[in-house]
Length: 305
Length: 268
Image 1 (cartoon, rainbow over the protein chains, first blue to last red):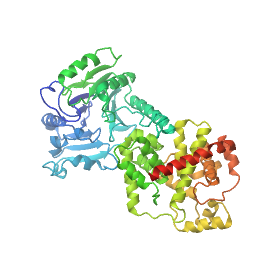
Image 2: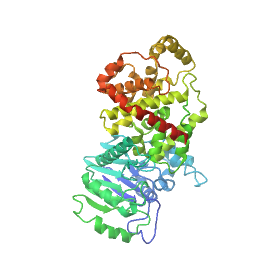
Image 3: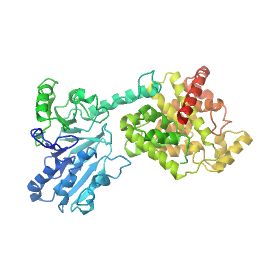
Image 4: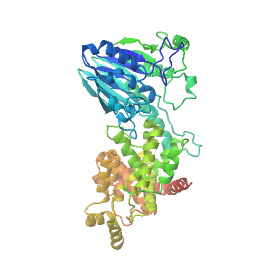
């Protein structure tokens, strides 16, 4: 399997002199599996535009494109590149868009296609020349994708329904875990608080622990894990419940789960190249966090598994 | 399903507030048997393809977050309040509500008094809260049933079978299965009057609910149409649960306090 990162930034694209090294485009990655025609794309942040151009230049001459797009969730930074993904305008292209959707927002087609209305964009979703199918995904322990490729999906902790993806092929594992914040007990734990409820306090604690363990089990033994790490521990103190993780959490959890390579991902738009270089000295020192190799995700980089 | 409007206003108020706490949200939903059932149903059908996954509101709020659960509760409550669903004329809403809450609180307190781990106690509450779900869909013919129960001083369930050909446990079972409630809860709804028929695995929990139901009737907590239940099963249920009559005495005050607190919460 080969993974190429086309966008690594969180929240909003932020091109400029301070993001030239790690990249300013929003979440998008390409997964190629040996001998498989279908191109797997995860997320349609602004990075998908350049991926589309590359597919048209390099793959289209070999025949019509078959693309499976998996959305981690439908927040705008993960879908905003879709209207600029050139293959959607090319007849003969077949695209299946998979993703989670909250029950009140169902169907997925309206959520993704909703940004292609005349009030937002000059082309309506109904006018696209390619063949696009939408499939809502839930949490599934095993989805056989054919050719020995297996997908597992897992609900993550984010203000809207979000999914992590785990692809397994010939003993290699590639896993995504973003946008995600560790689960925590949301219920009041102070027995003197007037709203305190003992059962809620205990069960909340129990479920949070159980779910954090379930997430680690989900990426257990991954050869490559792309994990949300938008904040430092200090920054996180004022961003609780925003649905993102800290560097520290991602590294410790990945290490506990025996992950081989961890890509710190979903960089905050205010994070400069200089800051990331400085942080890399702390977080990416070889051997510091056991056997897990830690690095900051960089736009345009390729990882072969 | 007909509305239990007692709590709808409060649900709408709390779910519309941006600063509502997880504790408040949990509490307001859990005070409405139909809403609790519908929210769990939605979660299990809309989000989890694996059946029996989410069994309590605490779990639902932790796993899916405040926003999702709030939206579910709000939309369910709004649909109910505007759809003009017919109300049961046979069982007055406020009394049926009090009986459901009373049974839930009682099942929870009995479980806690008998050493059931605290984090499992909410499931006992929900099972008690929902045990009479099967009575809600009955229409006006239920007035006749209840009046015969009074006249002949017979157990409700046998009159239901005679007059309607079906009892509220069987109807409840159908709803529970449709709503994808877990097997423990479905068993409590389906067998609280004949605990020995419950699957062995869930018999203890069903017995707690059966006893809680009985005790709610003895304490006159609300009214659910069964003032002359069959005699005999309580001894068997005490054996199954290992509860003693003394324990019932110990929790009596707490039950009334919890119900009173719930009423105050809903009215303020």
